Each structure stands twice: as C-alpha cells, then as structure tokens.
Image 1 (spheres, helix red, strand yellow):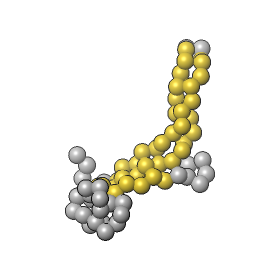
Image 2 (cartoon, one colour):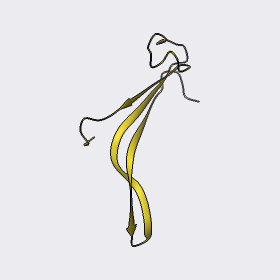
Image 3 (tube, rainbow, N blue to C red):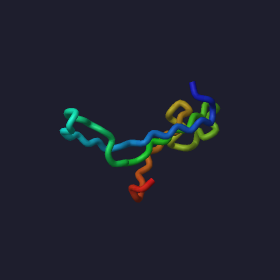
Amino acid sequence: MFPDGAILVKDVFATNTEALTTGIASYADTLKGRFVMVKDKTDRHAANRRCGATDGAGRSTRVPKHRKL
C-alpha cells in the first residue's frame, strides 16, 4: 500500500467533551504526542530493535517537550 521508505506520522490528541448549543460534542483538544512509522520492506534496519521484529515497519512514539507545534 505504501512505498518502501514512506514515513507515516499520526498526531495523538487528548479529547474533550462538552455541551454546546448544538448538543453534546467531543473533539480533539490537546496534542499528546506523535506516532511515527517508517516502511522498510528490504530490512535495511533489521538490527534496529524498532524495525527488526515488526516485519519491516519501524515504529516510535514521540512526546513533544512543549505543546506548541
């Protein structure tokens, strides 16, 4: 689906729920961190503990030191 070497980044947010004039609403509120994944189908990084045991997809979670990104 994704080409070799592709980098996927997912922002992870805390949620908030409140009563608004249109009803109860839930929404993303505060950034909590980022989930990063790199596609490596040729096992270039097989010795790396983040990639070797994940069938060629290295994963990492990053928590920002500050909330302004």
